[in-house]
Image: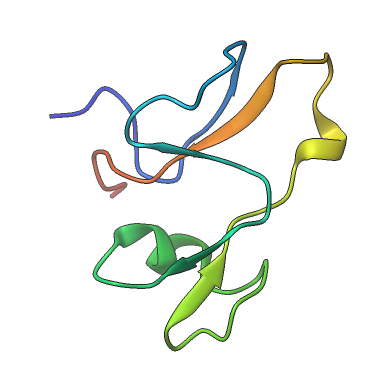
Length: 78
């Protein structure tokens, strides 16, 4: 059991992205069998059939070297 939910956004003060997370920098991911696509769909980009994009929140980071990350693996929300 993970202590976070899939799709949960965290503002983290690290120079790295923790395991089971991706930076919210607009990158395109394969849909695969992940729960994350079911949660956010292709509202941030991608074709919706094989790829989707994560939100790009780099312009909204409040302090340099602090980044928004999204949980790509975790407990599925109910």
